[in-house]
Length: 317
Image 1 (tube, rainbow, N blue to C red):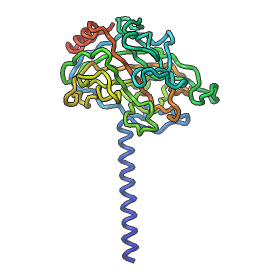
Image 2 (cartoon, helix red, strand yellow):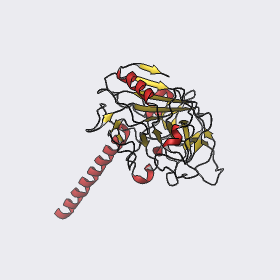
Image 3 (cartoon, helix red, strand yellow):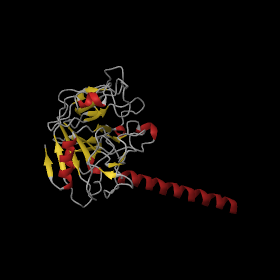
Image 4 (cartoon, rainbow, N blue to C red):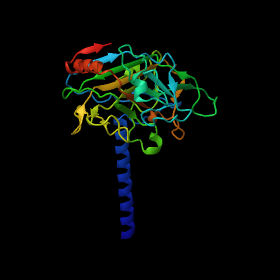
């Protein structure tokens, strides 16, 4: 009888521990902008998503500029950051703004000699996976990668300063990465909560959002901004440019550079289903959203940006 009681007590204790751990994990997911209860068509109600943490208190400058919204239809499957020289999977398409020559065979020389959609002379390239609206049946040979591509109705590029001190210029050819294109199969360590609606910009989720009529679906990419001072890229395409801590401070032996926020807005009807292009095996999951940049700003323009940010001004080109 004593042995049975001991076994029962141990079992109940283990169950309580597992329940506690489960509650803790669920709270962490909810607090961190992770997976949420979704509606019937797999869209999350943004009213269920808590606001993100407040921005650090110190004021910094901002610099916003116009590179269009890819009205010219510059798209391809290349990724000059992660896989330069390789064409990529035919059903994982990127949208571009900025440098008009970005393609599989791009080199620093060809990019530097190209034209740009940016009105201020920025030759950098900025890109992300396309967004598609989808119907109940597939229309291509790649189920899950079909449906008309949605052109953003707005693309906003904004640099901000660092609340802990001044920023230094980005070097030319510095590559930046945010999000994880293979989050489903690699554990999701680098997932970024990018999804929201235009009326709930302070709330972010890793689910596709359900936005009310009149709102725009938004994707917001906050890039890392602590540079190691040595490299413009790294083997992981992340180690050379990392994220600051929540208070804005950079890790030891890194230096704050202008922090890029890229915001995309789409006019998607509330009842429409939509999804991003994703690699096979990633289930078109919103967790796999991601974006890249390669800085090719002329040095004089970058100096203007840094001066604006460090002097606390609001600048727009």
